[in-house]
Image (tube, rainbow, N blue to C red; front, side, top):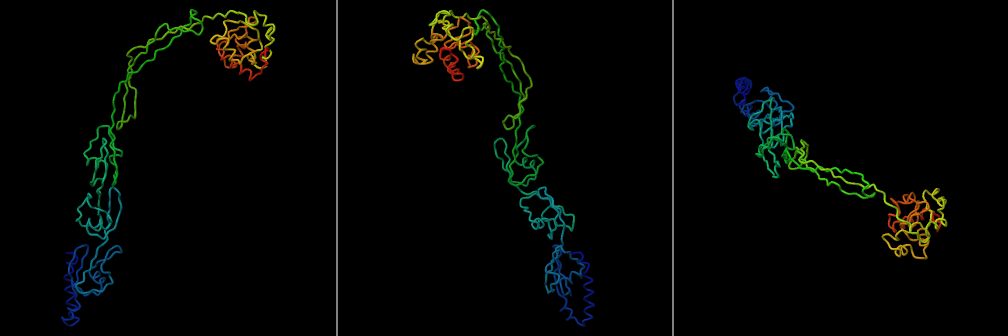
Amino acid sequence: MIDFLKNRKVQIAAQAVVITGLVGGTGAVVTMNKPVTLEVNGQAEEIRTFGGTVGDILDSHEIDVDKRDQVKPGVGTKVDRDMTITVNTAKKVALSVDGKETNEWTNANTVGQALADLGVDAKGADLNAKASQRLKEEGNDIDVTTSKDLTVVADGKDHKVSAAVGTAKEALKDTGVKLDKDDFLSVPMSAEVSDGQVLTVNRVKNDTVKDKQAIKAKVETKKSDSLYEGETKVETEGKDGEKQVTYKVKTINGEQVKKEKKDEKVLSEPKTKVVIQGTKKKEEPADTGGSDSGDSGDSGSNDSGDSGDSGDSSTGGGDAGSGGGDAGSGGGDMSTAEIKAMLGGPGSKWYQVAKCESNFNPRAVNQSNHAHFGLFQFKLQTWHSMGGSGNPVDASPKEQFERAKKLQAQEGWGQWACA
């Protein structure tokens, strides 16, 4: 029942008596006095009225209508017998849906009606009040946690969640999955979740790992004239040592993300390897003559008194010095016949140069100045400038020929007086 309507029964009866006297008869009163049902915010009561419009009835009962209120039918509607007049006043609601807060107005009378009126799907939702609870004019706080379908991934498995959960912590609790001390979720535990969201449990392990590693042996070199230059001999065999290194290793879901060295312990010391390196000079090969026996060939070449080296001064290393030099032992790793064939035979210019300079002896040494070497009587400076190493007499005939061709391409045939 509507309290303010109850209080007005006496007034209505009194008005009816007065009007009866004015109109002069009971029949007229019955004609003008109409039964009407007045429902305000879901509370209904039958009244009898002499009002002509809905607005008259509301005024007579001191019901002030705000622009947000809902009145059916409208205030200008003519009153008929047995009419139902419905008034739903506007009510202010502080609404929170999954943590999102808004202030709303509704003409609904209960929590459930208000949610439907505001477009909130409350099916399976968690509410802070019963859906049937009536709303007040003000001070209505409605908190809604909607039902959601989520997935929690843990230990390679999908755990489905279909419940009214608001935070990641609540979703995890619903699955029954436990977190160890260092484990964590892909979002903060207090984070609000949404429908269809996927949460991942990250398993963290901090392990101590011991790793055995080799300690490389050092190599010590000793000089000795007991060996020729370029020769080496191992005096003491070395041996690698071994150490144990302790690490703290952090993994997340089985993948290493951090490795920190914590300790190191030597298990066995390394043993130094000692190598003997020769310093003894090699003896020069004896001069056996060649086509220019002795030093007589030198006088016919451009090597007399190094005068034939004039080309070197301008080109940085030409070898005009000739002379049969030291015939040595012939072709070294090639026979004399093979050397001649390599040079192109008697008709080749290279054949003539090698015959004149060294008589095809790749170990030839100019005995007049000991400054020109090999098949083409290179000076050491020129040999090195052409990319050779050491002494030409120690190189193969093939290498000597290649470097001679390189010299000729750069400086011309003028490097050899025999050319």
